[in-house]
Image (cartoon, rainbow over all chains, first blue to last red; front, side, top):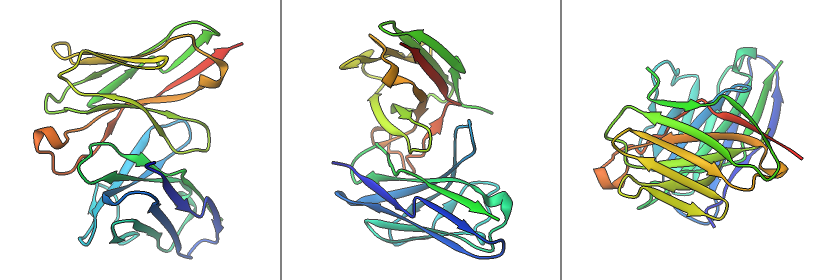
Length: 115
Length: 117
């Protein structure tokens, strides 16, 4: 149980285009979903927290107009990187927290490469 | 200000040995302490977690020791195997028990564990 999926697992795009990443909780309802960014050999950096049906809360320094987050249902959240640039290339990971639990279950991650 | 300090940064252990990773936290409001294992190119996977009302928790070869007064907790991997080679992250959050409203995890910087055959 407690499986989180992400799609796509990797994506290559041209500079200036937008990319959408989906995060789904497959066997539970996620009250809260989180989006992280991870650079090679570094820890996870929280980008934003989203609760179903409400606006995402972004961490300091994260541009909310560039990283659009939508938590449309209790099983789906999306991250859209708008007007992507090479510096946005990174490993993006989502996590989901079931109702009544402290535990975050992580997705497998999405490798974004912007050319 | 880093709120969860993790050490060592890297660790090499022989097969069958014990791997020990330590973490220290500053925020006394933290009440949930998970450990995650991450393989290259994959998302972190929950290994084991503990709350401050328990001093030790064991699941198979993995044990968390928790010292509330010292604000420290550690992961012990017994009988370490080459398949345990991965990056391990400790984390902490304020959760349900403390009326946490955001459940945000604060991560340590990670420990790269290599288990030699």
